Length: 237
Image (cartoon, rainbow, N blue to C red):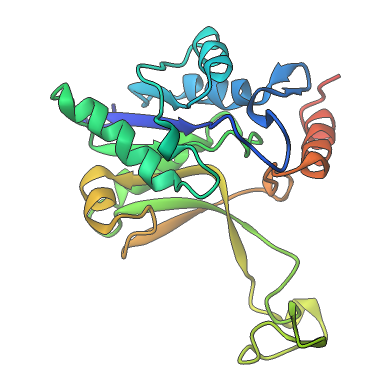
C-alpha cells in the first residue's frame, strides 16, 4: 500500500513467444527471465500482490516457486500472438472483482524488461501518488538514439523519410530528445485504466531510465545484449 491505497502488480507472461522460444523462462545469468522481474517486485515496499498471468504451466510453476501468485490461468484466447496485454490485465482484474477485491493502482511489469533497479517501482509509485491531482498514470521511458528525423521507410523501392513532417538535422545534438516506453513499469490508477482502456491516460507522466536499462528482449540478440549488460553493470558472473 501507499497512503492506504492498494496496489496490484501484474506480470504478463504467455507461453507462445515467437521471437525467442520459451523466453519468459529461458535462463538469463542463471535465473529464469521472469524471476528477475518477480524479485524486483518483491523488493517493493508498496506492492500488495504480485500476480503472473500466463497460459503456460511451466511458467506458472516457476513463477510460484519465485514467490509470485498465479491464482488463475489465462484463457488461450487471451494468449494468442494478436492478443493484447491490456485484455490480459482486464482479465486479471475481473478475477479479483469476482472476489470483491479492488485495487487503487495497477502496476504492469513486463518480464522482457528485466533491467530494473531495486527502487524503480517504488520511485514511480511515489511520483505518481505525490502528483495524483495532476496525473493518472506514469510510464518508464528511455531516450533513444535512433531519432525519428532519420528513420526511413521504403515506398515502391524508394527510400523515404518515415515522417516527412519532422525536420531532418545533420547533428544528433540538434534534435529534440525522443523517448521509447520500456517495460520497467506502467502504472495507472485503476479507475482511469478501466475508463480510458490504456496505461497511456490523458494525464500521463514519466520516469526516465538510465541508458543501460533501455533494452527489451524480443529475440536472441536482445537476450544476449541484456545478459552482457547485466554482467557489466551488476557484476554478475
